[in-house]
Length: 85
Image (cartoon, one colour):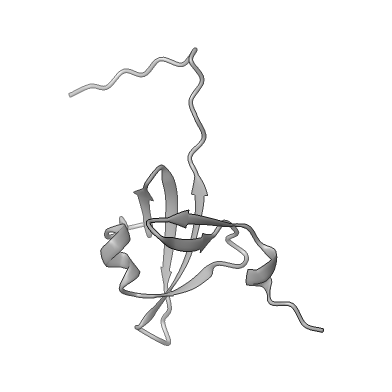
């Protein structure tokens, strides 16, 4: 019996799409998911629905993208933030 790595890792649901939480076994998705999630920055990352989503475009097939995500942790009440404009 064989088991694929994608079946062993946890997934999160982001905008109706299940995305892997493991960078060792990322989800292989169609490149049109970038329209739903938004364009990544220069490092291949985007923040979508309180998740950091990492994109890696496949060099051999321009129709697919490798994606993994992790949920941003809540900040503690003791932390204070200052935003300079």
